[in-house]
Length: 462
Image (cartoon, rainbow, N blue to C red; front, top):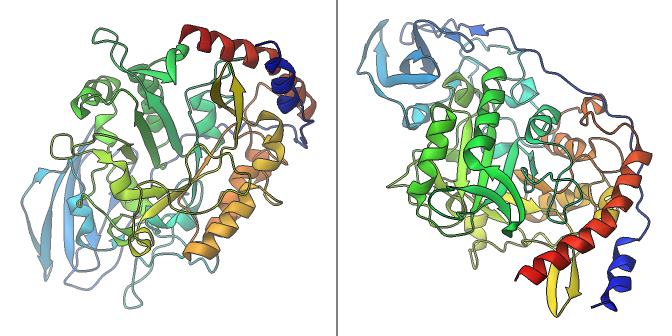
């Protein structure tokens, strides 16, 4: 075993390249309500929408003349589709726990400006009707409001809850609230089920190696952030490591208060055109997409989406610094199907370490400056460029380790902004507990002995 130590330290001791700028916290203020109205022909009624504190019935008008009458009580949206003719309307209220009602047409209410580059901008109005101009950002940018979520690139924190200092199984520095404030809009992690009394926990590989607490507690924190940021749309992607039934996930989501925010597609195998725009999801307050990698059953739990029915992924736990943009999960999916689905690039480079006769994958800590960079070989920026050339559109989800590392603070968000064709403010990132690139570098080297001890302890336990 001792002969393996120099080998491990040699792999981890390659000098990192960090050119970090001092981070600046961006405490997003609670936004003021938006009220948008449209002057339309006699066949379409006026749309008046207030997002933050609606107190009465709200009417959303679509281009095809249909309307959605909604009444918001707390965070619950009730409503049903109706049609309007010559100013008269009829509606039949029904529960809007699913999002079928958003599929009746393009939403008039919140629209962003046209975008000539990056992901293409969806059209929310026609030339025959006055266009509404929205100045309130959706996920940080007004330009994204009228785009389908399938037409937006977002940064995903790989193993978001795993932020235990000096633990080999950690994948992030900052906790989930900081992640969300910095611009993370995808939260990915493993769930484990130690026993019935413990419920679902957030563990990496094993709860003996890293246990970040319960799923319910984590979701409660995320729900609190959503309440304070009503113009943000996020995704939660979970690994069902113990292959428990999908009903096991209901209680943590209910108890955390997340249920009113969950979006349910009208199709169980949605393609790019089937997804709503960010503004539609915001107006209805259905701003969270939840996916499960294995054993999802949408007949039993409609909002818990079968992940690989809706998106595909590049090679999982990559060890190849070239990051090939080939489709790996689900296996053997035809290219024509992949081209019409959302997709995620797994851009978290790992090192395969042989120890005590076993193969262990650990994050390539000392290469994070290059891996999360905007440009260069093996960079996130280069990966997105290659994927865009290969598939004709940028990836929707950019999954990364230690998002605050890169060739400058926030470089991963610069890559997403470039893919979306919008401008990124480098002063928005990242975190608050580390103030310089030197501190990052020192912290990385301090991790080396703890990484080794954690791996050995895990192997001895198993």
